[in-house]
Length: 458
Ligand code: TRP
Picture 1 (tube, rainbow, N blue to C red):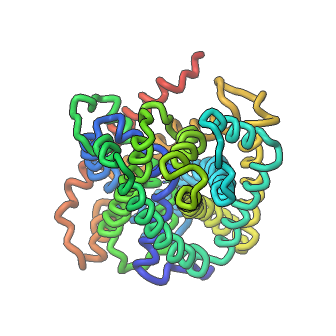
Picture 2 (cartoon, rainbow, N blue to C red):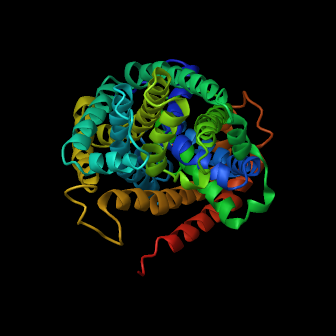
Picture 3 (cartoon, protein in one colour):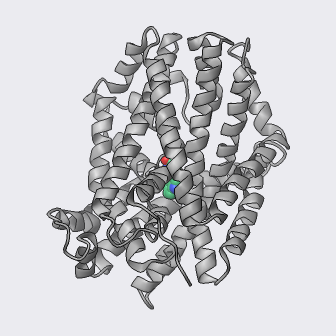
């Protein structure tokens, strides 16, 4: 079967960066940074990226590009006949799972873009925002309609193929995302009192950094770089043989981290401007859909054009970020289905789309009509979210690093990252050392820590 490649290096990097830059950059990273020591947390985070993130990202790139196959196929090819082939399948399954709940949030960002654009928050009292959100997600129709819309866009891009679908859309959406981020950052930094927000984000406080915070930084680095399943491996299977793997991984990590920090510059100046305590704004959905709409209205002038534009651009930014990540998740499953079951791309993509429509709808409805269905104290959405984030991803990441460090042939590894000897790889020994010892151990710790939180025994 003819297999497509990305048409250019920049296209490949933008697509991978599109996968990495997502909701995680905006709704988790800034608040974690502010609460956990500011610049000190950023330093810990960057160290996590250097010691864990990069080696694993490079390995995922390498496995994908070497085999030119979907993630399940890639591990099967590399581990013929051994149980290691299950790592690839686990990755595909994980991505599929993440996509179901991730799309639900993507759909919410569309609704909030529209609400902002029509000035729907004008004159809403602070207490009203929680109601607006809760009644929206509890509605049986609205979120589901948006979900279908969101998934339809993903489906459209995926069926157009790797070059004219994924790559082309990344080449449009990623620059758009950079420009919006820059514009919002400038607007935000010009607010009176912005310096307090910047200080909250950047003031280094090493006393806050303890083992829990380090584990948190690791988990965040992992999720934010899209590691631990097959996203980057699948994308790398469309890299050409000349793509420098290590350099690409560094570029993707830099883009991801810079956007995450800028998201903090977008959020916190407004929070301080209106005299709110950043410890009250929440994290994740409550930060994004309850606190921030209110914060932006008040900081930029309730109902004014500036507030409307700022808020609309912010949710549109989130939408673009979520969309490019969701596309990468869909591609993992689509590549798997089409290649392993020898289907046309159109058929394979439709099958994947159909399953996420069904499961995504269940996740979406779990805030409304299906909220009664609970397991381990969680609704369906949280089960998908926590099971993939706390169990499947760390497990996948650990297995990938063990596979790359212990199972993969050392010479093959060296040949691939040096592009057959063309590139110098002075970091090679360090990389292997991390893959063999540091990464499995560190991820194992995150895993155990999270399982503790996951209270199955309750
Ligand atoms: N990295 C994305 C974010 O920050 C989410 C994401 C996309 C992801 N693909 C992934 C996370 C694969 C883990 C694994 O929002």
